[in-house]
Length: 279
Ligand code: PAF
Image (cartoon, rainbow, N blue to C red; front, side, top):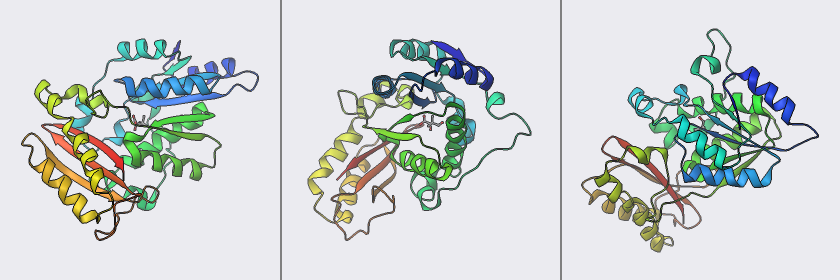
């Protein structure tokens, strides 16, 4: 596996390895890799001739400096996982390499996709994601790029990004990977105390239990989820929304949840956990 830390090295590595029209599968990450990332890498490995990953904690998508400072980083462990998944090239730049002073940045707006839920709670987050993923796509020019559906809204934003950029990369959304206890795998899980980690599966258990109410008005489903999470002293609900899976716009309270997507964010201490489910 080749580790590139500069854009130049990456371009050269790609030019020499991407011969004869080879397809390139790309998995962009912020590191702290876990089995969720492994499942993306595994799929990308199977579906492409070359496998490229990036490990870059993108500062401009964090609206909270504490969250950025606390974001878990372990590049050596990441490399072991990437190697085991058959990655050919990993791009691991420093912040200055990605954002050199004075260099103009290609920016995107995502309209209503970025003003709701994660976009509303984390102002600037999707703008930052758009910048970095746009830069990475320009550099790697992947055939296919793989993203986990835990970040469901991010997948919608990235599909829109590709549309705006007019590039032929195929976005491959991959199902959420869960622990045996149901907790959606996330790099942030590593920050949970053992007690919080033991309680955290209650989030998905609640979403699953709420499926029973799929034919009921959203108001009832929301009340159910809010009450259950509210009953758990270790958890603080940031939001639970039921939205159209394409437009991501909120479904009216009197309409049935069926066919829509439930989105939840829960704080456990200083750790922000996110999950979603299809009704
Ligand atoms: O999902 C992530 O890990 C990040 O948002 C991404 C897509 C790698 C961009 O920094």
